[in-house]
Image: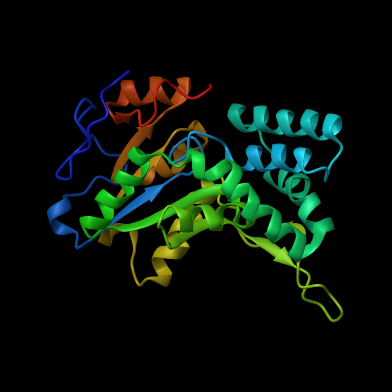
Length: 261
């Protein structure tokens, strides 16, 4: 395992020097620096979506045997890069769609206290704060849905969140709550590049006017890793670790040991 010292002026000590992705530019010519972070197994040592599913089992909202079987199967597909994100989001949000806003929001607050807070580690917070102290724009870019992740981003002190957005039932007589469908482009695989590009446009920016650093653990994020100025394989799975080594990308292990591959 590589050492985990953080340096405000360069890559963490004990990591490979940055080689850049396909969008390498001279940092001195770029005025805006942006730090992009995946969430699950990158800033958190857990998968928040999978953990939320386990929480709904314990909460008695779903059939434990059937839900766990499907949840584990979807998670394996995610790790293998074969996930149907629309099918997964319908499955993952079925419980909150049924429970409604009041019960779901209250349950998530308990989930934050019982599960997430203990998973927010000092070294991850310090990495985020380091970028913030340096004046970088910090954005979490996650394939997990906004209901699960927005309170987590807030707990990490990050206001900019790009997550899977959920449609709401806003027709006449509708509840205004989530329907289980995805709104817009899901921030998953190539969709992360699209969503970051949309966010840049909203800020009056473009890829060639910014310097981006992207931290991720997963091969699913390869499109955005290759687009970023500086890709950082963070707590990488086995395939990403091998690719990062081959390409000379920075490798950063924030947590003790490697996450499950």
